[in-house]
Length: 481
Image (cartoon, rainbow, N blue to C red; front, side, top):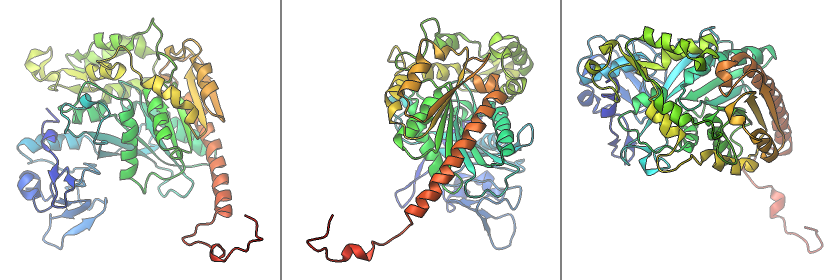
């Protein structure tokens, strides 16, 4: 399996007492003999080239040859790029193949350069069975979208942190991102970058962690993982920062905002699953539907035919569906289907990148009838300290009863709500252009307000490291407090 070798990277204890997810330079030759023989070396965030007889060349993230494996040994950043991996043998060959699929690429319209990062998830999960064993540690695969029209971002350029829906993966939002940056730049503003991670049990993160995943998932584990992401890229994720969360991702980013009230400049909830009671009406049971769904096909062609024939996917934008075929499927063997000889199609068979089992665990907790996360977030809505925009699908199953009205009533002002016509719950997949333009206009307004308030604050509260001398002067009895 692709991730079998990645599973071997157990944390090591550094002499300083710090947990190291990868070996230091002194031991890499012993632990990674094949990679070391190819001229690859690393030491805690600094990349050392040993491909020539010259003085070792250190670089911080810049690639001086195609045989550099970009790893930060304390687990901060994993592979971003590998060049030629021919000749790599043994168990690490599979890991090398996995990393080869994660090099940078351009989005469909060429508006973003995408760079992939591997970071550790927040180590302690909320529920005891959030991982297979209590001491298991999870990793996240993160996409960073860099606008090609803004190679040198300036102060005031917007950073976006995005969270996806349950059962989905980060690449499904690329058309939404491209429409958004087009509209945002037309307004004369610039995006710094967009960050989105596959949550720990879905997409590429789920593939990396499939041997350590548990069956009791807290949505708010990803809220804490957002902080892990920001901590690992402090120079790239800077204010103004806006959060855009779709479905489950909306609840996750709103929860992160509750934990850190001034983290985000504003929040956009795209049909967020936040409700005072159950999030879904009695007529809808997404967990049951996911449990019964087909999850393996003899070939990629059979899978494409199947998906295009299903009404659920026919409402998607065609570009989004193509991305699902590219990133939402993977070949066997996997942890769920370890023996290709036992499935139709053999080694040509494909299955879901996000397993239906983990999707169901994320809809429902195994120990409870219903998931409490949407209700918990609803009780915290009145504590949100930043402006909020809701983008709702007109026919979304989430909008049953008076959920929309209750959200608007409880959310502190300023808040606003926009309804996307002829659209269900999957707003960014069904109407990427329409929803992106709503988001762009809102973000442009909020960043302008943020900029004005920031300047006013600087004028009224200049930075200082010392107390004014007047505070040390003796106060007369006649002076007023």
